[in-house]
Length: 198
Image (cartoon, rainbow, N blue to C red; front, top):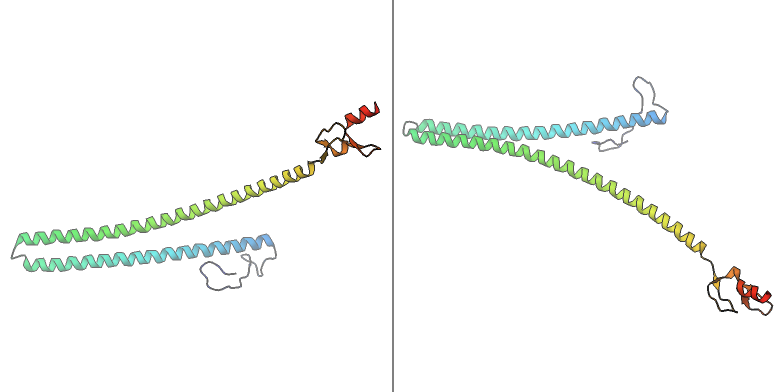
């Protein structure tokens, strides 16, 4: 079987813990396979989470290194010019603090963006599940309606009886089974037949 995160199919023994051979019980085999699958999914999710955390940590480290580098450069420049003007020194120090704040804001914004993307993904996944459930319910309802309609159609077609016209009184829509053919070949309704015999 090929588990999540694997590129090839691999044979696996469905052997219970402590057993020397694979189980022959279907339910136990299904439970062991389900446990393998869940473990593989959990491992894949943990690996993806670790990879994302490592990327985020590297990005944070790069931002911090950039901020630290910027701070170091600014401080070096300020120390070189401190004797020239205290006001110039204070302005550059404020500029440095603003850059650090912006770097922190960027890191926070990136973290929030990642959280928003994950939330959006989860929401879309939920919506897809809901849409699938609704589609399945609709298909089931349509199938039931079709079965009922076909049953009604069969009932209607089977229940419809042929009718004819009385050749004596001219009445229409007399059931064929109620018309009686007399010696002359005419077909009469029950009323006309009763009057004839009358």
